[in-house]
Each structure stands twice: as C-alpha cells, then as structure tokens.
Length: 312
Image 1 (spheres, helix red, strand yellow):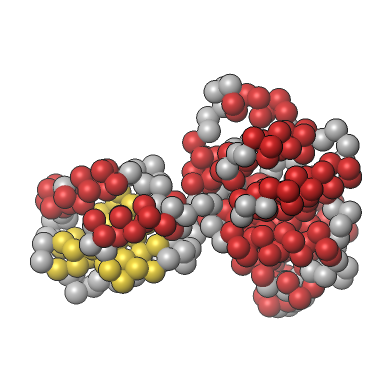
Image 2 (cartoon, rainbow, N blue to C red):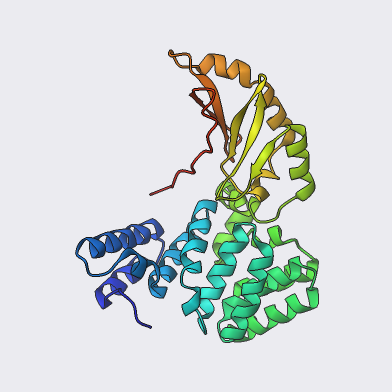
C-alpha cells in the first residue's frame, strides 16, 4: 500500500499507539503541515492517503467522543475508493458511523467488510452488534461465532455472545471496555462512565422523544448532525438560534423537563449575563452535560453556529 508516511513516521506512530491518541493526531497534523510547506505533497494527496486516514481513524475512534467519531467518518470516506480488501477500514468506518447515529450505513459497511476480508475478526464483532439491533438475532449469533473462531477464547466475543442471547440492546452491548479487568471495573462502578455514556447516547435515536422536544419547545428550521444540530427557538416575540452540541440521537436523550425549565428561564438568565453594551441574546448553546451558553449580538444576526473544532 503506497503511502506518504515514511518508515520513520510509521515507527513513531506505532510508538504512540498504546494510548497516546491525541499525540497521534498531533503528529499527523504536523506531518501534513510540514509536507505541504516543504512542497513534498498537497493537502488533497495527504487526505487521500489510506494509511494516514487509518491512523487518524484509529486515534479518533479510541478517543471515544462524538466529535472525533465524526472526524473519523470524514477521513475514511475520503479514501473509500482504496478500501477494497481492507477489513480494518470497513470496521473503523462502521464503528464511526454507528457512534454518529448512522446505523443503517454502519450495518451496510459492516456486512461489506466481512465479505472484503473475512479473516479480520473485529469486523464480525461489529456486525453481530448491528445485526442484533436490526432484529436478526440468528445472524448476530452466527457473526459472533464466526469471529470467535478466528480468536478462540477472546473476552469480547465470549461476553457479547452471552448478551446477544439475553437480548441486550445495542447500547447495552456497547457499554463495555475491551479488556476484561477494565470492563469489570466499569461495571463495578470503579471507573467514571460519564464519557462512555455520552458517546453511547449518540448512537440510537429516540424518534418520539425528539419529536416531543421539537414540538414542546416550538423549534423550527431544524438542521441535524452537521456535526451538531441547530434550529430557531422562539424568544420574546422573535427567534434566536438554538444549537445542540450533539447529534440527533443525543438530543433525543436530553431531559425534556430540564429543557423546558431552561428555555423558560432564558429571559432572566439573559438579563443577568447581558454585556454592558446591551446587546441582545441571539443564540443559546445546549451542551451534553445539561449546561448552556448564551451568545449576545445584534438581534438581526440570527446566524447558524459554526461548530468549534476540538483540539487536544
């Protein structure tokens, strides 16, 4: 597989692969910036390099946050034309799509992945989850069995087999860590599960709950998953921009009572936070931890909130 990465670059990335996921992304960013500046390659060439995309997706998927899964989908989509026979590409793309709430697409790529490289075990692990979610229990167990045969005794496959037989939901199947000791600590309450539950909240959309949120708050001009959700929200005889820094699936898990109380308290909150220049409230940003941010400006500036890139 031809790549812009040199043997030295690959060695450095391998040295970071055991948990230094932000460092991997920084290394790739610096590698591309330096290469472009030195005219060794173009930005388009770097973004169309399969091995670079696989390293980016490896880091992003392991960070296990919605924004990074979204980044992973973008990088992997750009190299789909090179993915033939590469089970790891299909596995990572399916996982990233799943955590972005794109479950039908995730299933499609999981199915195709095990056809492209049937000897890659983790593609079967992913396929079993998604088949189960879409009601194919027999197919899910068969996929799990096929993967287990490739890595006999593997903890993930054995644990998942039991949960598939119990009829666990996709969200329950995902609420685990790879290694048995870490997984045990998670379920014994010894580890903080906030970030994991936040990621899982973005997987399965509750369509009725989302409908209730939109109806109750009288939201209009809804735009979803770009990567966040935005809308217009009624406020004191006009509309302001509402931004939910999450995808639709995660929005559908928000507490409706909290949303109603928060929206009704906006006038009072705006008075407390209004800047000295008396600019009006133009935007409210809702976060996953049930906090908000108010943005002030000229009333006619009812602008779409550009999602901020998270960099670490």
